[in-house]
Picture 1 (cartoon, rainbow, N blue to C red):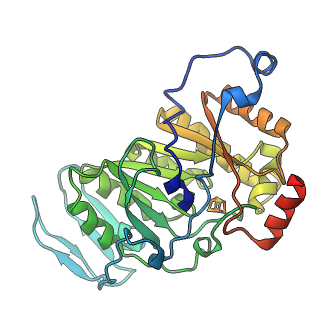
Picture 2 (cartoon, helix red, strand yellow):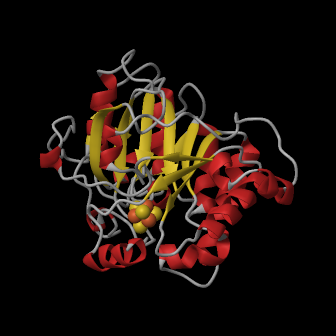
Picture 3 (tube, protein in one colour):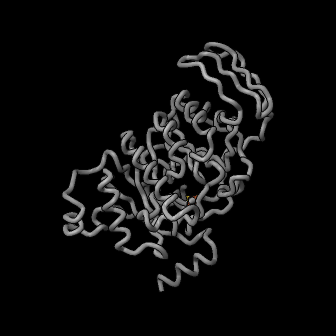
Length: 321
Ligand code: SF4
């Protein structure tokens, strides 16, 4: 959901729930000022999947995958035993908070992690974070930069234990961990992962397009900030995401955004403006819709051509000619 070029761009100020003063009705706002005034435009997109080729980033930590069977010796309270095999349950006896049983298929060790950036200053505005890129996305956005991270069948390249090892060395140095993608909420192991990150005393950030509202809901109590990508007005969502029925992806996205806003979580709502689909009026309409939902700043990002398909680049060139 983020872009590698973001590292070269200034941080975008935190927005959303803590945003500016109320304004009059949508029609009054439209009359009073163009959308460009109400929306914040930034120079480069941040929501597309970014290349996670391990050879391209020295900051990425990729220890060799280790056997999933491991025994965690007694810590503060008791031993946690993790048996081998995806079908066996991992039993975590009562700890500081609660007893829970997590199957390996649902635990953080099940995560397919495409890449890990040990230090990022741009993935969560104003925070120093490690960023975990989760493999797979159900959508196929017109301008997506990285087809390599979309396939949900591609196995992970980084074990969760590498993230834990990194965090163990970064207490006091990192503010938190951002989970990005792909669409990170696709993987059910994310819930266990965010719990573990919070348990280590780090804040949790999340990049999402809201494709899985039912999986997003249980994450919200553990998430401190969300970069939420809104693709288009509802009637044009499918033209961007290119999957599902007429309103399927829009329904899920706006349901997710509603939940995030109702939960009062700090959120930056942003849109990569694809001129092959969206007109200026469409962007105005979307900004008004978001305002009516309670969003007080809508960050607009320019589409980039790097990593997109030849067909998309040709279409973009045609509309820009
Ligand atoms: S297909 Fe869309 S939602 Fe999925 S990673 Fe690419 S830009 Fe993000």
